[in-house]
Length: 168
Image 1: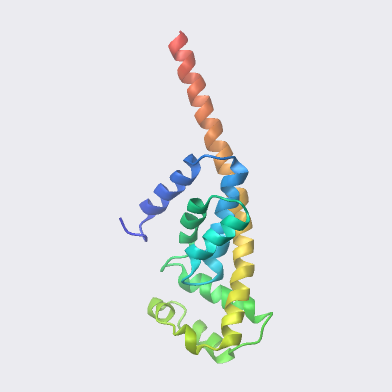
Image 2: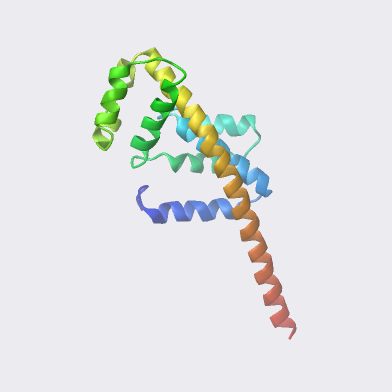
C-alpha cells in the first residue's frame, strides 16, 4: 500500500481514533505531528517525537500525523511556508519567484538543494512552516478531538443497542 493512497490515510485515521487516551490526549498528539510535519522538511518524525515528548503526547500518533506532508502536498505546504515566512524574514526573492514558476513541478520541490539556498531562505522557510504548522495543527487538534468524541459516543450507542437486543 502506497503512502499516496487514500486507503493508507483512512487506515491511519482509524488507528488514531481507536488509540487509548482521552480525546484531548489524542488531539494533542495529532497537533504535535501536524506541527512537526510542516515545520522542518525531512526531519518531521524526529521532531514530532521530540515535540510529543515535550507536550506529553503519544509519540506514535504524532509520528503518524506527520504524513500530512507527503510528496503530493510538498508543493502546497513548502510554497506556503516560504510565502508566509517572507513576511517576517527577507530572503532570496529570486528563489521565491522560481518557486512560483515551478509550483506544480513535483521534481522541482523534491530535488531542492537545501544547502545552497542560504541561511535567510531556510530561516524564512522554517518560520513560515512553524506558523503554518501551528495554524493547521490547531485546526487538526479541534477536528480530531471532535471526531474521537463522536466515534466513542457512536460506539457506546451501538453497544447499548446491542445489549438491549440481548436482553429482549
